[in-house]
Image (cartoon, rainbow, N blue to C red; front, side, top):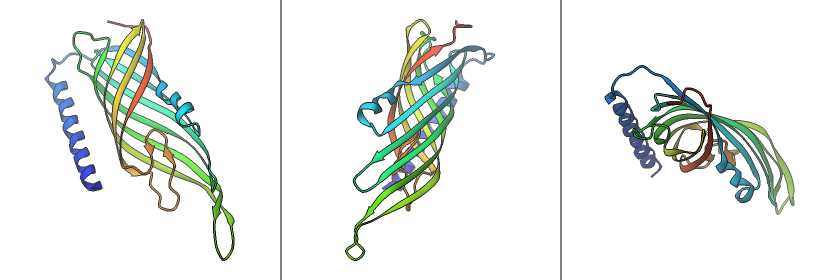
Length: 222
Protein backbone atom coordinates (compact mmCIF):
# COMPACT_ATOMS: atom_id res chain seq x y z
CA UNK A 1 0.00 0.00 0.00
CA UNK A 2 2.88 2.39 0.77
CA UNK A 3 4.35 1.84 -2.71
CA UNK A 4 0.93 2.47 -4.26
CA UNK A 5 0.55 5.74 -2.34
CA UNK A 6 4.04 6.85 -3.39
CA UNK A 7 3.39 6.00 -7.04
CA UNK A 8 0.01 7.71 -7.22
CA UNK A 9 1.31 10.84 -5.48
CA UNK A 10 4.37 11.10 -7.73
CA UNK A 11 2.19 10.67 -10.84
CA UNK A 12 -0.09 13.43 -9.57
CA UNK A 13 2.87 15.75 -8.99
CA UNK A 14 4.40 15.02 -12.42
CA UNK A 15 1.09 15.70 -14.20
CA UNK A 16 0.65 18.83 -12.12
CA UNK A 17 4.15 20.07 -13.07
CA UNK A 18 3.58 19.54 -16.78
CA UNK A 19 0.31 21.48 -16.59
CA UNK A 20 2.10 24.42 -14.98
CA UNK A 21 4.82 24.36 -17.65
CA UNK A 22 2.25 24.12 -20.43
CA UNK A 23 0.33 27.13 -19.13
CA UNK A 24 3.52 29.15 -18.89
CA UNK A 25 4.69 28.38 -22.43
CA UNK A 26 1.25 29.03 -23.95
CA UNK A 27 1.27 32.64 -22.77
CA UNK A 28 2.64 35.39 -24.95
CA UNK A 29 6.31 35.82 -24.47
CA UNK A 30 6.97 39.09 -22.69
CA UNK A 31 9.97 40.43 -20.81
CA UNK A 32 9.98 39.54 -17.15
CA UNK A 33 9.17 42.59 -15.03
CA UNK A 34 9.43 42.69 -11.25
CA UNK A 35 5.88 43.25 -10.01
CA UNK A 36 6.25 42.93 -6.26
CA UNK A 37 7.92 41.41 -3.22
CA UNK A 38 5.87 39.99 -0.36
CA UNK A 39 7.02 39.04 3.13
CA UNK A 40 4.78 36.55 4.91
CA UNK A 41 4.21 35.07 8.36
CA UNK A 42 2.61 31.66 8.94
CA UNK A 43 -0.16 32.58 11.39
CA UNK A 44 -1.54 29.03 11.40
CA UNK A 45 1.37 27.93 13.58
CA UNK A 46 0.13 30.02 16.49
CA UNK A 47 -2.64 27.45 16.94
CA UNK A 48 0.06 25.24 18.50
CA UNK A 49 -0.32 27.27 21.69
CA UNK A 50 -3.77 25.68 22.03
CA UNK A 51 -3.54 22.30 20.30
CA UNK A 52 0.16 21.43 20.67
CA UNK A 53 1.38 23.17 23.82
CA UNK A 54 4.55 21.08 23.78
CA UNK A 55 5.62 22.68 20.49
CA UNK A 56 6.75 26.18 19.51
CA UNK A 57 7.23 26.84 15.83
CA UNK A 58 7.58 29.91 13.63
CA UNK A 59 7.73 30.27 9.86
CA UNK A 60 8.05 33.06 7.33
CA UNK A 61 8.26 33.45 3.58
CA UNK A 62 9.50 35.76 0.86
CA UNK A 63 8.06 35.70 -2.65
CA UNK A 64 9.33 37.70 -5.60
CA UNK A 65 6.75 38.23 -8.35
CA UNK A 66 7.22 38.83 -12.05
CA UNK A 67 4.39 40.12 -14.27
CA UNK A 68 1.95 39.17 -11.46
CA UNK A 69 2.14 35.63 -12.85
CA UNK A 70 5.30 33.88 -11.73
CA UNK A 71 6.74 33.96 -8.24
CA UNK A 72 9.99 32.65 -6.84
CA UNK A 73 9.34 31.63 -3.25
CA UNK A 74 11.53 30.95 -0.23
CA UNK A 75 10.20 29.74 3.12
CA UNK A 76 12.05 29.24 6.38
CA UNK A 77 11.23 28.42 9.98
CA UNK A 78 12.20 27.15 13.39
CA UNK A 79 10.60 24.59 15.71
CA UNK A 80 11.29 23.32 19.21
CA UNK A 81 9.54 20.63 21.25
CA UNK A 82 9.52 19.95 24.98
CA UNK A 83 7.50 16.82 25.66
CA UNK A 84 7.14 15.39 29.16
CA UNK A 85 5.60 11.96 29.63
CA UNK A 86 5.39 9.52 32.54
CA UNK A 87 8.06 7.23 31.09
CA UNK A 88 10.29 9.68 29.16
CA UNK A 89 11.14 13.33 28.44
CA UNK A 90 11.78 14.38 24.85
CA UNK A 91 13.48 17.53 23.49
CA UNK A 92 14.10 18.70 19.93
CA UNK A 93 14.89 21.85 18.00
CA UNK A 94 15.48 22.41 14.32
CA UNK A 95 15.13 24.59 11.26
CA UNK A 96 13.68 24.12 7.79
CA UNK A 97 13.99 25.79 4.40
CA UNK A 98 11.89 25.56 1.23
CA UNK A 99 12.60 26.84 -2.27
CA UNK A 100 10.23 26.80 -5.22
CA UNK A 101 7.84 28.77 -7.38
CA UNK A 102 4.15 29.68 -7.71
CA UNK A 103 2.06 30.33 -10.81
CA UNK A 104 -0.93 32.71 -10.78
CA UNK A 105 -3.91 31.58 -12.86
CA UNK A 106 -5.86 34.82 -12.40
CA UNK A 107 -6.02 37.34 -15.23
CA UNK A 108 -8.74 39.84 -14.31
CA UNK A 109 -7.48 40.56 -10.78
CA UNK A 110 -3.68 40.48 -11.14
CA UNK A 111 -2.95 41.82 -7.65
CA UNK A 112 -4.61 38.74 -6.08
CA UNK A 113 -3.53 35.12 -6.48
CA UNK A 114 -5.24 31.87 -7.32
CA UNK A 115 -2.80 29.22 -8.38
CA UNK A 116 -0.39 26.42 -7.69
CA UNK A 117 3.17 25.92 -6.63
CA UNK A 118 6.02 23.46 -6.22
CA UNK A 119 8.67 23.33 -3.48
CA UNK A 120 11.70 21.39 -2.33
CA UNK A 121 11.99 21.31 1.47
CA UNK A 122 14.92 20.53 3.75
CA UNK A 123 15.02 20.19 7.53
CA UNK A 124 17.80 19.72 10.06
CA UNK A 125 16.94 18.91 13.67
CA UNK A 126 18.64 17.78 16.86
CA UNK A 127 16.72 15.68 19.38
CA UNK A 128 17.34 13.81 22.61
CA UNK A 129 15.43 11.94 25.32
CA UNK A 130 15.97 11.53 29.05
CA UNK A 131 14.35 9.76 32.03
CA UNK A 132 13.43 6.83 29.81
CA UNK A 133 11.83 4.33 32.17
CA UNK A 134 12.36 0.58 31.63
CA UNK A 135 10.45 -1.98 33.62
CA UNK A 136 12.32 -5.23 34.31
CA UNK A 137 11.15 -8.11 36.49
CA UNK A 138 14.78 -9.10 37.05
CA UNK A 139 16.58 -5.77 37.47
CA UNK A 140 13.65 -3.66 38.60
CA UNK A 141 12.86 -0.23 37.19
CA UNK A 142 15.73 1.80 35.79
CA UNK A 143 16.24 4.89 33.66
CA UNK A 144 18.23 5.52 30.49
CA UNK A 145 19.07 8.54 28.38
CA UNK A 146 19.24 8.95 24.62
CA UNK A 147 22.10 11.22 23.65
CA UNK A 148 21.42 14.06 21.22
CA UNK A 149 21.31 13.04 17.55
CA UNK A 150 20.86 15.01 14.35
CA UNK A 151 18.36 14.13 11.67
CA UNK A 152 18.07 15.46 8.11
CA UNK A 153 14.98 15.25 5.92
CA UNK A 154 14.18 16.32 2.37
CA UNK A 155 10.75 16.34 0.75
CA UNK A 156 8.86 17.45 -2.34
CA UNK A 157 5.81 19.68 -1.99
CA UNK A 158 2.90 20.65 -4.26
CA UNK A 159 0.35 23.28 -3.26
CA UNK A 160 -2.81 25.01 -4.47
CA UNK A 161 -4.04 28.17 -2.80
CA UNK A 162 -5.23 31.77 -2.80
CA UNK A 163 -4.00 35.18 -1.67
CA UNK A 164 -6.31 38.17 -1.42
CA UNK A 165 -5.62 41.81 -0.62
CA UNK A 166 -7.73 42.72 2.43
CA UNK A 167 -6.10 46.10 3.14
CA UNK A 168 -3.68 48.12 1.06
CA UNK A 169 -0.52 46.00 0.72
CA UNK A 170 -1.86 43.47 3.28
CA UNK A 171 -2.79 40.01 2.02
CA UNK A 172 -4.27 36.90 3.58
CA UNK A 173 -3.42 33.53 2.03
CA UNK A 174 -4.44 29.91 2.39
CA UNK A 175 -3.17 26.80 0.60
CA UNK A 176 -3.61 23.04 0.59
CA UNK A 177 -0.28 21.19 0.55
CA UNK A 178 0.78 17.69 -0.47
CA UNK A 179 4.19 16.62 0.90
CA UNK A 180 6.11 13.55 -0.25
CA UNK A 181 9.24 12.63 1.71
CA UNK A 182 12.29 11.94 -0.45
CA UNK A 183 14.75 10.79 2.20
CA UNK A 184 15.52 10.97 5.91
CA UNK A 185 13.18 11.54 8.80
CA UNK A 186 12.81 7.89 9.80
CA UNK A 187 15.06 6.20 12.33
CA UNK A 188 14.31 2.77 13.72
CA UNK A 189 16.44 3.35 16.81
CA UNK A 190 15.38 6.92 17.65
CA UNK A 191 12.40 8.27 15.72
CA UNK A 192 11.87 12.07 15.65
CA UNK A 193 8.59 13.23 17.16
CA UNK A 194 8.03 15.92 14.51
CA UNK A 195 10.05 17.20 11.53
CA UNK A 196 10.19 21.01 11.25
CA UNK A 197 8.37 22.17 8.14
CA UNK A 198 7.21 18.65 7.29
CA UNK A 199 5.24 17.25 10.23
CA UNK A 200 4.66 13.72 11.48
CA UNK A 201 7.93 11.82 11.07
CA UNK A 202 6.19 8.44 10.75
CA UNK A 203 4.34 9.39 7.55
CA UNK A 204 5.84 9.30 4.06
CA UNK A 205 3.01 11.38 2.58
CA UNK A 206 1.26 14.27 4.32
CA UNK A 207 -1.67 16.45 3.27
CA UNK A 208 -1.95 19.70 5.20
CA UNK A 209 -2.73 23.41 4.99
CA UNK A 210 -0.92 26.72 5.44
CA UNK A 211 -2.35 30.06 6.61
CA UNK A 212 -0.25 33.16 5.94
CA UNK A 213 -0.50 36.91 6.29
CA UNK A 214 1.61 38.91 3.83
CA UNK A 215 2.88 42.45 3.46
CA UNK A 216 3.74 43.62 -0.03
CA UNK A 217 6.58 46.11 -0.23
CA UNK A 218 4.87 49.12 -1.87
CA UNK A 219 6.87 49.74 -4.99
CA UNK A 220 6.33 49.18 -8.70
CA UNK A 221 2.70 48.07 -8.26
CA UNK A 222 0.59 47.71 -11.39
